[in-house]
Length: 285
Ligand SMILES: *[C@@H]1O[C@H](CO)[C@@H](O)[C@H](O)[C@H]1NC(C)=O
Ligand SMILES: *[C@@H]1O[C@H](CO)[C@@H](O)[C@H](O)[C@H]1NC(C)=O
Ligand SMILES: *[C@@H]1O[C@H](CO)[C@@H](O)[C@H](O)[C@H]1NC(C)=O
Image: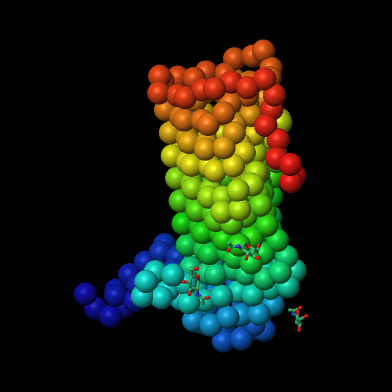
């Protein structure tokens, strides 16, 4: 092959294989990070250093399906993040679509991550010391390997088709609230209640058709939505089922309350089900 052929091949490869085109930003200060967020194009990578970045960071640009924008922290040897974002109001506000956000510790005072965009992936994130850890208003976002601790509110969802897997939460006042949106998927979650009183999971009225599997909830679970599929769910506290057409398989509940005269199926036999006459309420909420 002569040199002209080789360069033609490299050109074609890079044209097809996006990362060749992507630019890499390596911000070394908070202002450089905000500048990178303001200028990243589809396929670009923002590689953060092992340090804390102080400020409220806003990303309004978007990647695309084939060329997501990557915002990556530095990984420690033990797999935890060496990169921290420390904010005052909304630590990381992502307004656009098609990001891959990975390996970050997010802390601050008010809100940790506000995700308004769609088709984003958030992976290996640790949240602590916040009033609200995660607020999702977009659709088709995927969250994996997220730990949350010492926060007031955990995850609040207002969009459809979002997926959460491998989530652990400790010491929070509320766990996961699906306020609106359909087809939310929750898989492999452990919501632990260190203070004894937590609103652990709420599937709000009007929401529908999600899937909840391999999950453990301490505290109160409220199922007001319809058409959810539960599999291998353990609710140690109380579960109030006031929605309809929900299916429960291989699930164990401490106490259960039904109000409406509609169908909720308990599919497998190993369900411990102790109906109450009144819904369980938490005094503190
Ligand atoms: C955050 O708050 C601290 C203390 O009030 C202040 O010094 C700092 O400038 C604020 N940072 C931002 C990005 O607003
Ligand atoms: C990030 O969080 C993890 C787990 O909470 C912790 O082990 C690690 O030291 C933190 N890193 C930074 C930079 O704060
Ligand atoms: C729980 O988190 C709060 C902050 O939300 C903190 O003040 C408190 O010390 C934590 N409790 C435990 C037992 O870690």
